[in-house]
Image (tube, rainbow, N blue to C red):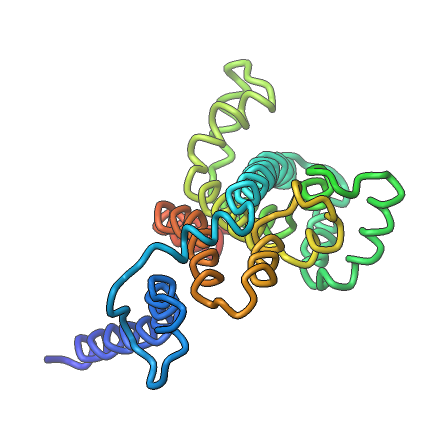
Length: 274
């Protein structure tokens, strides 16, 4: 066996080991969610439940309105995902296919915003939305995240690999800029759009600080904030808390599992083109 094959085998084994180390805590949490309370706290601890039970899940959905929280998070996450795809793709289209003064400066300014931590602007954003009276609304969870500098950067890098001749041929056929974007550019940009969509959905689903700061209405809370209600309601019943965590984790895992290949393909395309 030559050195290249040995290197590949070693890399695969290393990836498997790292993957097992990463996923073991999640699997153990899943196992604990099926254990009764007395079995969770016993010593030495069990790895698997002796008698699996769904009582923790039944208590989780009755102690806190988890499905309402999931609906709120789904509504916000899907809205942010669609907005970032549309706004990011249209902005990237203008930066690639239009020629105007200051285009490179504008692009560098957009990229520069990626270097500013979100915590730096959270107070000013909060004061702004509070002044507009948007607190305790879905809009306050969506409006600040309608666009993403990273999304614009990713799509722009992908668009740089599209031949300009396609645009020129479409213009000769009488297509305007919007129709070129809608009919030609978007259909061939599915990998990067799927990649951005998955990234935006999971990032929005996992938000905690901003919803905690802006939402006080229990009916508008998202899952990451709402799960804390379950912890207080059930005290030290960790099985119920873990069952709730498993429930709210499922949508993001499903989205990631469905779009994993598109995510990797889109990230790679955005990194090497241009």
